[in-house]
Structures are given as C-alpha cells and as structure tokens.
Length: 217
Image (cartoon, rainbow, N blue to C red; front, side, top):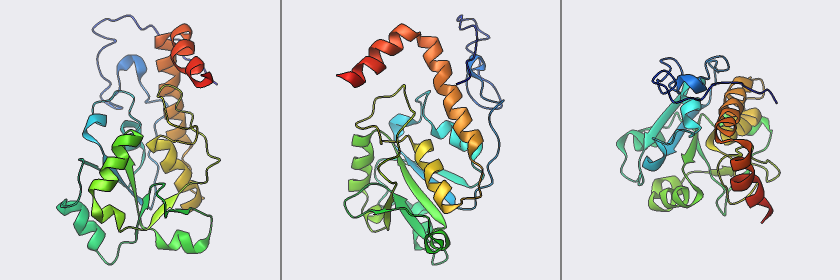
C-alpha cells in the first residue's frame, strides 16, 4: 500500500482546511477524489454524532458520488423530505441494513432494475440500530444486506465484527452489484489514503497497541 510522507507539525498551515476536499491540508485527498457518476441515488441517514467526526467516511462520499443525499437525525418517522421520496411511485427504494428479514444482495438483472434509491444508516452499530427501531417508515422498506464474507478495511475504528463495513465500503460493495460497470476505485483510494494518513499521524506503536493488539484479545 502506498505510503504518504507528510509533516504533521501543528502549524496554522497544517490545521487549515483544503477548500476542495474539506479535509485538513496536511491530509488533503484531492489527488484521489473523482466524481463517480452513479445512477442509483444514495441516501445516507446520518446520526448527528457522526457529522463532526473527522474520519467519517460520508465526508468522502459527498465529494465522490454524483447522486447522493445526506439527511441528519435520529428519528426519521416524520421527516417530510424522506417520506415524500419514499411515497413517490416512481422510486424503488431499498434499505441496506442487516436486519432479520434482509435478503442478501445478489447480482441479478431483476435486482438491478428494481432499486433506484439505496438508503444507508451512518453511525455506530448501536446508533444505527436505534435509528432503525425509531423509524417505522424504514422498517417498511425492503431490506437488503451484503454477503457476510465482505471484510472492512476501516482499520482505525473499532467494529463489532470484521464484516461490519463503513458506510463508504458498504456503498461501494452494493454498487458493485447494482451497477457493475461503475468505477468506484477513486472512492476506495480516498478512503484508504485517509486511513494511511491517520495511522501515520498516530504512529505505528499507538496503532499497534490500540487497534491491532485489541483484535487479538
């Protein structure tokens, strides 16, 4: 994996944000970001606590996917914008959420033709579950999930299981099936660069102690 040799001294310049990618200039992702012309509209329902997280992957998604909407909240039951979208007969919406009745997303023409809007919940597993249980309108949607063999590369955030993907990873994996000709490599590259820069900043010892060693326990 490519390494990035950057100076992380805390100067006013290093703390300034890049106007293009909205990341710190010392962690600029502009060289990897590209517009991805997805046809299936991604709708991310984001928990408020995630909006200011510096390593939240939705920040990369907003700069990558052409068709994307982010809605922030904890209970979307009476969200007018969301309910208007869900009630539109032209839309075929599905929720990417590993609920009990969720069906595994498969590469079939029928699946590709049905979904026009893919909803995802962005938050920790506990908070995502709270959003789902608090929003009956989400529970009424067809639920789909990814094959369990997919493993996350989000090495700098703790997850309940190896197949607990970040929102960006889940979106990319779903679009690989729903839009197989779509090139999502730039979003993955930006995601991986963000992780590499953070690991470099924290140092290998801290990373080893707080992340790699914890997985062995």
